[in-house]
Length: 338
Image (cartoon, rainbow, N blue to C red; front, side, top):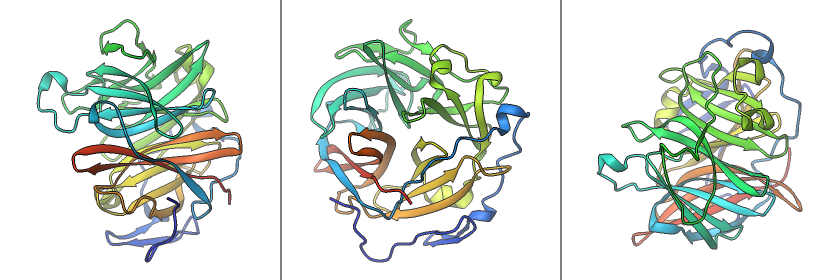
């Protein structure tokens, strides 16, 4: 399935342009500040320039309605670009047992969605974002960790994927890789830009106060995640009423730009582009309503990742669907640049 226009689709072309939707009008210039940048130096550093994906450009659909382990709901995914595998994070949406809040399954697949393995994580979080890091013969996963009673993680954990393993949140196999930069860090969520070797963490300092911070992956791997090692830090735009109508569903980064996936089940889905070099706070430079997977029953956007394919980098984004009680995962991508 390709992302072909169906009906009316709206594209915000300018960084100060208006985007009109059923939820109202969102002015990119008036998204509001999530607070000033903290400190100087690295907190105000520029990210090296890069190309930006063309959200209206060509793409593909390598995974279509793939069944994942345990029939739990896909929340996010990441590519092991060295071995061309995908790791999906899944949550049990029907859990009512407080002892299992934050339980996740990780399913490993090939790039077409064929299952290759799985492991269980107990009391980690909601699986909003996952990152994969091939390193020294293993594949390390980065996820939210130490679930709160709400089901969302309070820390970031790094651990090696092991097929068939069950990992408790208290396991010594989990390395705490939560940034410590002076901010409160609510619901931290990791992503890796494999093209620049950077770890990015999206987090909140308060209600509707999202931020993003970047580190060299080599520093992050070693646990050097304090203020002096951050490469850049930015406030993300306040989400306001737009965020209420269009829940955040995942993010990734490619060079200078961060990409956010937004939308709710059975409703419109959007990819929003953030310029990490904007002044004062990051600003929406593009927002695209994607019709990818419109025929999926119970379609809900879930997760983003960068896929370094032999033909070039790809911006991948996913959808969960439910066909007669069978939970499924689909992945689409964009491959052209503006």
